Amino acid sequence: MSIYKAKFSAFGSHAPAKVVNNFDLEKTMDTTDEWIRTRTGMFERHYCSEDEAASDLAIIAATNAIEASLVKYKDIDLIITGTVTGDHAFPATACIVQKKLGLKGVPAFDVSAGCSGFIYALDVAKTFVENGSAQNVLVMGVDVLTKITNWEDRGTCVLFGDGAGAAVVSRAQRNDISQIIDCLIQADGSQGDLLYQAAGGSRMPASHATVDKNLHTVYMEGNRIFKNAIRSMYSSTDELLKRNKMSAEDVDWVIPHQANLRIIEGLASKLRVPMEKVIVNIEKYGNTSSATIPLALDEATRSGKIRRGDVILLTAFGAGLTWGSLLARY
Image 1 (tube, rainbow, N blue to C red):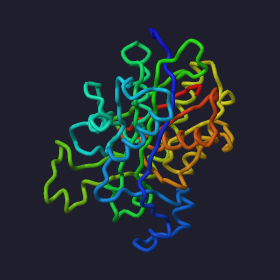
Image 2 (cartoon, one colour):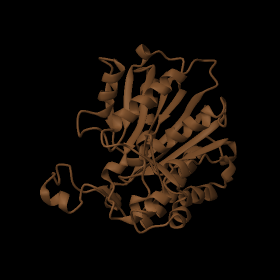
Image 3 (spheres, rainbow, N blue to C red):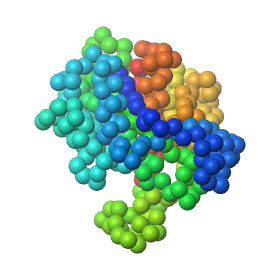
Image 4 (cartoon, one colour):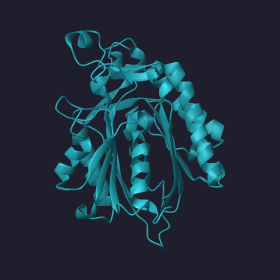
């Protein structure tokens, strides 16, 4: 049983400086701006430089989130990062961010759930706060997918960008209007072969052969992922709303994973939510995996679109297959 309630104190985000648009991609591969726009809704995406890694983006997003909150750095007592493209296989990217923040001794670990990583990490943070184990948790979603993109696969290489987002999840006080209401995370490992990176782990360690065969890059069966994404995100949001005796009409803003505009529109249609209530920024960032939701949240709150007291619904789908949804009053 929960002892306390958790809430969002603030958000932060960061994307690398290099911007690549559809016309830039036209020059290097067999694609067009029209083809990309009509199928994905994307126009621009941000790419890391050769010497930039996940922690470089995450530390800026984390700093922006902490600075936007009333929480002091020394009061952060847990750090969780959702990522599948950390600086290294180990140590955890969360530990690298911990070092850069100077928070020695604070527990830090990564969560690997693909594009659902931020939602999964939020669920863990919520549990730690509710049971009294932590008071202020720094939660990050960061991915550098351009470092594992297969540039010979035009169906996937146009999709991905790099970015990071962060949230400070804190213990709510009795008079707080803000509260994380509920969260639901799920998975289906039987369909993991629809979206994965074949080489680089213990199953298939790096070798000349794996590099030559491009096995260290993203493989995705787009059509099947498309159908699974809409069905799974709708199922989790519907269950989450029902068990909290709420409906989509009670939600002010839906913030979905930004993987494909058609997926977002399909989900909105099934939820019977007008697109005016859906936060979309996919045209500026592309698919940044676990960073898409916190990037969108940070932009929407800083611009004043999402205000304190608004009911927000987050939902994501990713490799694993994993998915999940979170309901909160900001």
